[in-house]
Amino acid sequence: MKIKAVTLASTVALAVGGALMSAGQASAAAENCRTGYFCIYLNGNWQGEMATYSSTCVSAIQGTLPGQYLNDHTSSVANKTTKNLKLYEHTNFGGRYINVPAQSIIDLTKNVTVYHNNGTWSHTGPFNDVLSSFC
Image (tube, rainbow, N blue to C red):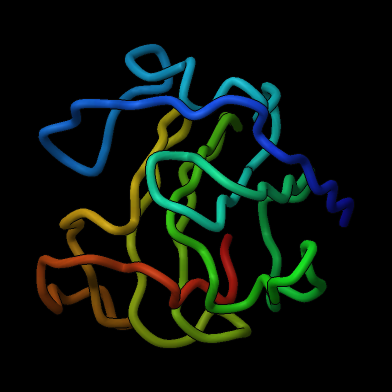
């Protein structure tokens, strides 16, 4: 697994009705996330410190960005891979999860559909600062 930290140089303001947008609709917001990578951002609206993953399955988000732990500190994501991903609230793909389609970006501070680990609906609401694993 390769992790790279990047500081976003510019602040991008987006008027977004929902949490999920296609990568094309908001490419400026997540422009630092390269094609083929999954990127997590410490702040909503794809701002702040960013970590990139070349692997699409990580059982435990570990490591730090300057001044922040990565586990349970994610507020937006960009999935620039060709794989649909599930983001889990616990390590080893445990607990509740959300779906992140391939080539999409999601602001986790907004309302998203959250599922129990058995696939049943849990609720609709933010999934902010709970990400611990993804696949």
